[in-house]
Amino acid sequence: MLVRLPIVALAFIVTTYGVSASQTKSRLSPAAQDLFDYAMYVCDSRFDYSYNYIWYVNDGQWDTRFTAWYIPGLLYRANGDDVEHAIAAIENILANQMNEDYDSAWYGTFKGAPDEPVPTPDGPLYPPEIYGSYDPNWREFIGTQLIQVVEEFGNLLSDDLISRIEDSLEAAAVGGMRRNGTFPTDDNLILAYSNPGIMRALVVGWIGVRRNNQTYIDFAWQQGQDLLTLFQRGGQNVLGEYNAPNYYGIDMWALGANVAYGPKDAPMTRNAEIIIGEIWKDIAAHYNPYLGNLAGPYDRAYTRDATTHSAIISLFWWGIWGREYGPQPPKGEADLLFDIGQGPAVALIMDVVGRYIDEESVAILKSKGIWEGSRFINKTVYDDLHEDVYRVATSWVSAPIMIGAETVAEDKNRGDQFVPAIVHWAADPDHKPYPYNGILMLYPTASTITAEAGPNTLTISYPNTTQEGTDIFTFALTGLPPPWILAGNVVTGLENLPCLKVNTSAPGLEIQPIVYGESLHNHYFYNISYVVPKDFEGTPTVHMDFEYTCT
Image (cartoon, rainbow, N blue to C red; front, side, top):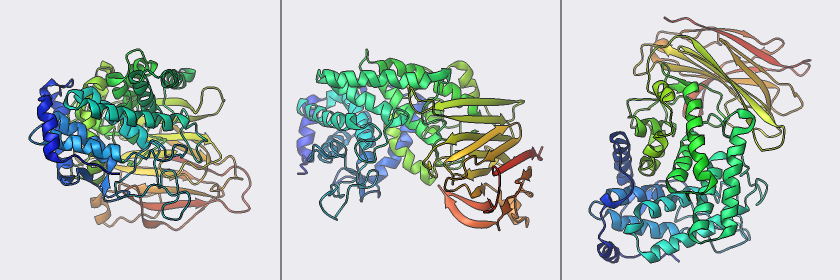
C-alpha cells in the first residue's frame, strides 16, 4: 500500500529537526559544485512535485532510480521545500520495494516505476524476466543511495524513517546475497560483474554493522576480500568489467561510496582505496588527450566516442577537475541527459575519488593536444579466482590513431555492448575542442574471437568456426566528417576514408555490398562485411594496416 505523508506533515518533521545543509558531511569543490548545479537543473525540470518522483519514461511514466539519485541533491541543497520533497521521495522509494514474496528472485529489489506491476509468476500480466519485469541490480543502485542519504543527511531524517530505511536495506541485502551467477534463474552476478558486486558489498556490510548481523558482515567481508583478489590476480589490476567507459563511472560511484560510507574496518572500504588508484592509472594509460577518448577494446560500452555521446566516467573528469577537461559531450546531448541524473549523488563523493588519483595520471588526464610517441597496453582479464579462463586485451595508442582488440573464447555471445576490436582516428583534425573521431569497429557476431592490436595494425580471426556467427566479419564505420561527405566522397569500402589509409587483407573472404542506415547506441554506421564462404578451409582472418594521412 502506497502511503505518502502530506507536505505539511513533512514540514513539521523538518522544522522539528531544524538542520541546514551546512551541517552535512560533504563540501563541494568548485568543479563538483558545477556538476551538482547542472545535474540539479536537469533533475528539477523533471520532478513531479505532486507525486514526488522524477518523470522519466522507462518501465513506466516515472523512474524510481532517478528519484533515488535526486534525493541527496535535494537534501544537500535544502532550499525552500527541498527537504520536504526529499523525505516524500524517500517514502516513495520504500513503497516501491518488492518484499511481498520472500522466495522470489525479485525479493528486496525495487520496481523500476511506481506504475509498473509486480512480476506475476502465476499469470500473464507481467511474467518474471530478469532485467525485464524486474532488475535485481536496483537493490544495489537504490540501496547505496539510501546509505548515502543516511550517512550524509541522517540529521534531517526522523528516527522512524531511518529505521525503515534500515529495514529496506536488510531486505535488499537478503535478496542480493542469494545471487551467485546461476541462482536465481538466469542470474549473472558473478565476481567479475564488477559494478553491482562492489555496491552489494557496501549494502550488505553497512546494514550488517548497523543491525549487528554477523551473517551479513561475514558475507560482505568475504566479498570485499575476493573482489580485490580477483582485481589483483596475476598482477593485472583489472576489473572483470574491463575498460568500460560507462560502467567505470558506476564503479567509481561504488568504490567512492564504500570509502566514504562503508564500515571503517570492512575489507571493501580499505580495498576500494587501492582499486580506485589502480583503475585511474589504467584509464590514464588508455586515455588519448588528443582524441579525447579511451582506447579500446571495451568489455561494455554504449558510446564509442565520449566526446559526442556521454560516458559516465566523464562525469568524474567534470566533478574532480572541471568540465574543460576530459571527454565531454555537449550539455544537451541525449545520453548526458540520462547520465546526469546520477550527478547529484556522485558530486558528493568526487573529493573521495580524487584523493586516490596519482599525480602522473592526473597530468595525463588533464592534458590536451598532440603528443609524441606511442604506447602499448597488454592486460589479462580473469572472470573468477581459480579457473584458468581469461581474456586478453591489447591496445596501441598514438595521438592521431589508436587501436584496441580483445581475444575471447566463450560459449555465449557478449552482445552489442562488447567491442572486441575498434580503431579511433582523427578524421577531422580541425574540429574543436577535439578532432572529430572516425571509428571502425568489429560487431561481435561470434563468441570466440582472436583479436590483436599492434602498431598501426589490427588482426582478427575466428579460431572456432563451429560457433554461430563465425561466417561473417561485420565492421561498423562511423564518424565521417560532414565536409568530407558533402565534398562528394562516397564510402565504397575501407580504401577511401578521411585522413586514414587502410590496407585490408581477408584471404578467401567475400566482401558484401556496403549498407548505411542502422544505428548502434546512437552511432549511425556503414556496414562493411566480409562473408566466410561455406567451402572455406582454415581459420578465417582479417588483417588491417593503417596509415594516418593528415598532418
